[in-house]
Amino acid sequence: MYIIKVKGKAKIPDYIQIRDENFVLVAYFRADRPMKNIEKFGLEGKEEALETLIKEMPFGKLQKLSL
Image (cartoon, rainbow, N blue to C red; front, side):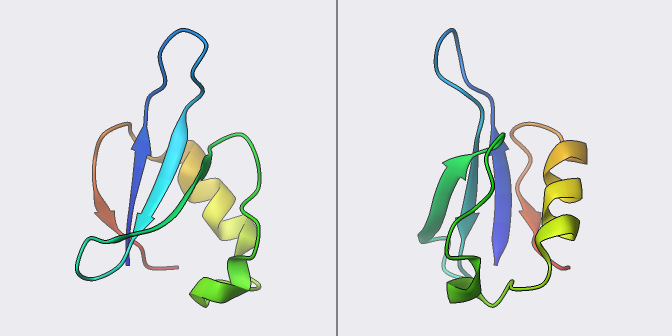
């Protein structure tokens, strides 16, 4: 899976996109709110690591999601 942080403009908040190996959008959520149903993507128990990654990653850079 891949993750990208998208910068919002004006009243639109920053968002996170999670994409599968074929770059199909799997999840799309606000960067300042926790992701719901995280267990659907095999990321249960990794919430803190995902939150830290989101805070530290640059905007607009697609990266392989490995936690």
